[in-house]
Amino acid sequence: MWSITLTDIIQFIVMTIGVFFIMFPFSVNSVGGLTVLFSSVPEAHLSLTNIGWDRIFQYFLLYFFGLMVSQDIWQRVFTARSQKVAKSSAISAGVYSVLYGLVLSIVGMCALVLLPNLGETQSAFTSLALEILPPGLLGLVLAGVCSALMSNASGAIFASATLITNDIIKVYVKKDMTDRDIINTSRMVILGLGVLAIIFSVWIQNILVALDMAYAILSGAIFVPLIVGLYWKRVTSKAAFYSIIASSLVVFISFIIFGITSTLPIIYGLITGLVVIVGFTLIIPENNIEMNKKNTTIYK
Image (cartoon, rainbow, N blue to C red; front, side, top):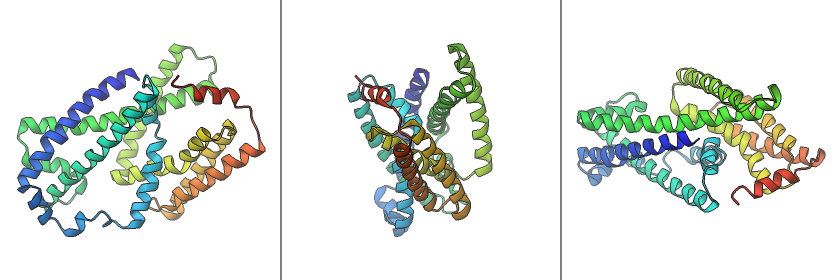
């Protein structure tokens, strides 16, 4: 995790310079300034509710709940040396993410004005960069884009590999794994997950659809067990496990029935997860005293 943290720092610096200090000012300047930009784009593009309240509600369910339980984010939180550092870092990252999103939105508006005939909107950023930036700065901006992608990908793949190796393989397949076995197995799992990620990216292609699916599973299947487990001391590990399994199945089945753009898979997943975790906890009690003690002393 330390190696990922070090590379994340470098990628963060490159990404920040490329987007905030190069792409943003060049884009706005090419349009003629913010005043010209806001007067040139359609009025609907400046409305926060233009996409519709139903879509806003769906995004809230997807990303508010999904980001709260995203494993790659939690891994970074747990590397903090104290509770104070963890809190301040999380708040700072949230503020940065909001600013990053606003800047990219303005860059997207600039692309709409400067490249009105652009057919594929997913390539708007790179197409605009190719249009307005000189070669040297273009390379730095594209490196910033790659840094953002690699930072998210490396953290997500590493987090998934850790879960699969420690919570599944070591527990159910090979219980007597040595440290060397864990490292080698993790490397193989990382390679396999990387190949699967490439296959899914080629299959789905649309990044928004991929994000909707991924965060729908996180929100609908993981949010309830994790949050309830943190605040209700009676929750058992079996209840959390079956809650994740049941709500995941409900989310996938709802995808098939209602489509991946529907809000219903998330809602049904949340309801299923809550019913299962409460029901199993009350029906099948388990001694969780040791686990709760560990949870309350993480940062002490």
